[in-house]
Image 1 (cartoon, rainbow, N blue to C red):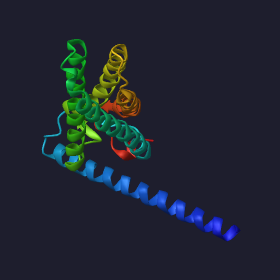
Image 2 (image 1 turned 90 degrees about the vertical axis):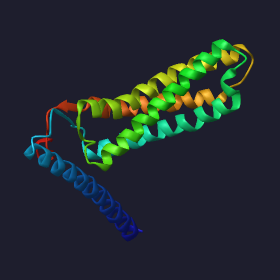
Image 3 (image 1 turned 180 degrees about the vertical axis):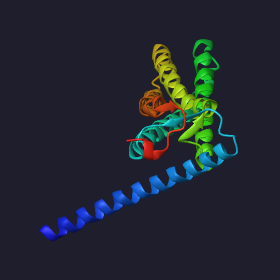
Length: 195
């Protein structure tokens, strides 16, 4: 029994160290690109995510759970109720919820793009705002709008359970994306300077 626990412990530690190595390698690639931009005088004013790599990964994954939940249930809600064309009060909030869904997805797509070009952790101000800023703002707004939609649909006697999941997804997106967004500090800070 003791050997099996020791073996499992060693496997877990090996997996943790493998994840850390991959995250560190990714950060090194980003820093290499930024150093190249500095040599060419193209780095401009950058903002660095000072959250540790493992915390960045965990909060990022939880943020992903939020926006995916938001995406699935917002589409289901809009498809089921067809934008409440018969009720102008709810129709306005359906349009607003579609706008927040687009905001979140544009933010996510731009974050993926920044990751591909190795500028996600050390980004320009506009890059930081268009990626993480737009994602968390869209998440917060979608949660608030879904609360209003839930209230309005309950008044007309409908049960819109999808709104509950949109609220949860929007707020999870916001709560776990906010620490990443707030961790960005002005200037280029390399990993050996962050402790």
